[in-house]
Length: 136
Image (tube, rainbow, N blue to C red; front, side):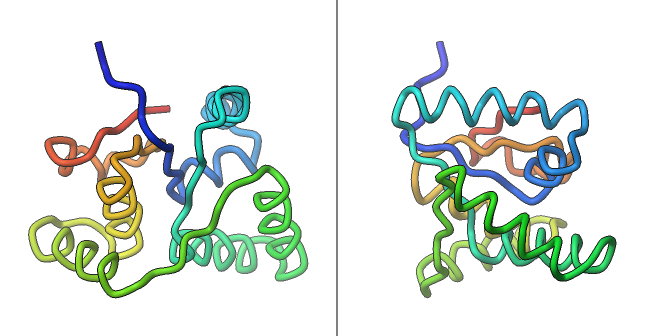
């Protein structure tokens, strides 16, 4: 039986699926609801939040990107600042795997908090031996 994570971490893939009301976004919504009921922290690196923002700003508008970030904060998602220790850990993932730098921050945050990463991004298959992943 898998251990109950101390926290869940959202990467940009999961958040965009949620915001764009994709099929996988329903799974993310259910996980957010479960986390709220169980008082499980929901974390996201500010680097990944920035990735969500720029994608929405580019595809829709900066105003809509700002609204989306506000919505995420209203959902209780904690944006985690990147201190050197997290940057170092993300850099270690980047040095060892062919994975985007932003995704390295999601992996690093997950590992640092002994959390579970919520994603559908297949890039994370590479780090499953080091990071607990829940696929949506």
